[in-house]
Amino acid sequence: MNDILTEGLTALSLPIDAAPALARYGELLLERNQTMNLTAITDPQQVARLHMLDSAALLGCADFKDKRVLDVGTGAGFPGMVLGLVEPSIQLTLLDSLSKRIDWLSEIAPQLGISRLTAIHGRAEEFGQMPEYREQFDLVTSRAVADLRILCELCLPFVRPGGLFLAMKGQKAQAEKDAAGRCISILGGQLRKDYVYQIPGTDITHRVVVVEKVRETPGQYPRKFAKIKKSPL
Ligand code: SAM
Image (cartoon, rainbow, N blue to C red):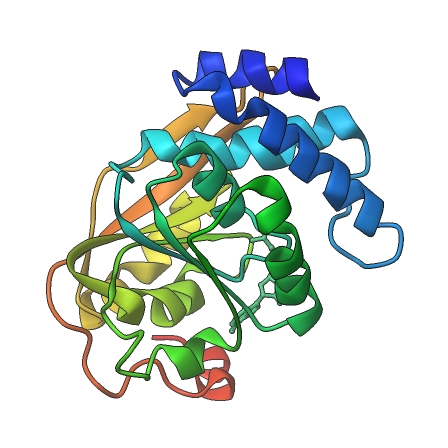
């Protein structure tokens, strides 16, 4: 994994000193995956490319240095944990509704040398209404959690005005974007240019939908999850 990561970080113009920690993270992931459902990807080379390098590529999309970053629905830590390993100045918060995954992330963070990590077990739609989290983050990230309209209601309330929501999507994000225009505007966001990248060592192209928070989110959002799902904005 170490060689693939070193080459991949170089291709992404990122510092290679995080490669050993990322490789160790991958090993810990596959080890714990034998007893806990963390990832469907079990080949170490694929873990390096499809989890580690895919997540690291997000660093090319915005300036993450010294930023308060929240990863919503982080699962086994993607992209959040990788961002924290490659750019250690980040003040990182990881949020997931599955306590086992959050407990595991808290357990491995010190082994990987991450000190400034807050790992929270909870639901985005509940934490987004709490004053200590609402509009408190410069950058909010999310990968493989929900359709863009649902995701925006879960994530935009956390972004401070002037900050960005970065939704990691596949190549086919256009249909989701087309449907999300009204919702983004209601929630105080504005679409910016997508960030498109190729995962090093693969022919896979991914797309980050970039939403800037231009106004505060109205207080009634996020709504309860059943409501968000039943009638997305
Ligand atoms: N982001 C990770 C990745 O790309 O590998 C995990 C993706 S996994 C398919 C989706 C994760 O989102 C799960 O771990 C799930 O528990 C979490 N999730 C779904 N809805 C959520 C919500 N409303 N609040 C917090 N976490 C949520």
